[in-house]
Image 1 (tube, rainbow, N blue to C red):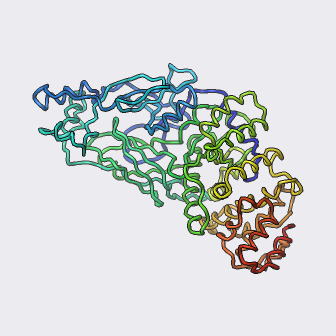
Image 2 (image 1 turned 60 degrees about the vertical axis):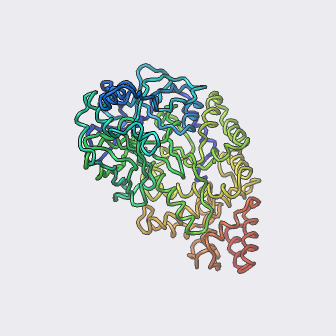
Image 3 (image 1 turned 90 degrees about the vertical axis):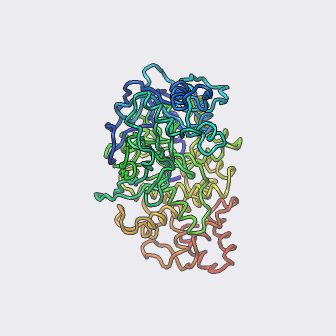
Length: 586
């Protein structure tokens, strides 16, 4: 892990033990977007609800509309969805609902929203939270605390099904929706059926290098659209462009929500002592859009100098989701095993509530161990390291939403100031994830155990330090190499990232990690070496893929790695490789 004390990870989790019902809503605030119809408020303020709306999709209203259009009451519509809310009182509740594939909202779907904020507090609750959604009539509620709000009839669920022609022989489903809207006073949202708008546009983030900012794409970001109970979905491509799979009629006010999750990663944020924030992936409502504005959405995630703001948190989430997409691309291009899919990534700003933490970024890979009894051992290792009295709560949270990657951006300005440094750190941690994907649980548990036992990397003479040395060397090599591929000469470090690792000097300065051979894998792949480093580099011609190929489960020392690399390369340049590793002190 990158310049960390891993035992600090659990402290960031323990800070959740002060329970709060304050939770980021499905409709948080935005910074800049075109064509919005709702006001977007500033950071860290509450979402404010207005009046309860007349729901046009209730079974009673849809039956009335259907009977008017049909001219009789001979056919009686039946409920095909139930509008319901679930009371979340413990981590298992949220996890079980998430596994059911439900689209959950922390605010009611049938209320006017006066102001979109970065969280919503239900004034009637204490240390609990309601989640709103729709479920099928035969949903199994066993084990859940819930309240049914309305029986619904959603006509669009019949489109393409055999029953459609029976229900809609005289008129179509859109006629029924229009009539139901008229009955509830929403006549402005009815009209010409041929005019429809598909949500599409661009999502970008302001990339910052020192004092320069550039708008760049946010990649592989999930986009949700919503009008009443009609949800659409899309993902941004590598240019930041998205199209949702739903179309919406004229004058229908559609919410557009950015959700920081995809097939690679779910990004959660722990905000100080807000216990419930860990449950749900980061998301941001960027506004309500209608008509042609739905097809020309442009949203830019801004940066903030204040690390305690929602703006900064979302800016960091943009870098995280971009970095994991780029990591998979770079791994594929270079013949490297990619990180596991569906990782949990936690962004933490643990100093927001005054708690001093030691962790910066780490790859504990605990979710990946969650299908193994080793997860419990991993959690216990953390708890032994801290001895915190809230251990039972921590175990509960960890077992439901265990982190694979953590990134605490509150510790140092280098962790939140410049985009290239942030990306380099993410690449470093994701390189650990690729290593984990190859070597598996036992290797990684021993790795975590060493880090905790030694309060960090330890010393080169410690038993087991070789596992740290070679793992960190690999991660730093990838971090610098991939940062160079993305940023080239546009960096915040005074030179490019390839030069940064080329100039690594073993045992230079007083850094606690200067004994780790950070440059050795780069030296296996490049030509030549600056004289001032003292490194003897007459090796050349090898690939990143070959470097990763020797990162086997039984390689737990630098010398073991060197020997394996020579074997797998046919003992070519054996003398030169030996000289290279000796110049690093091995």
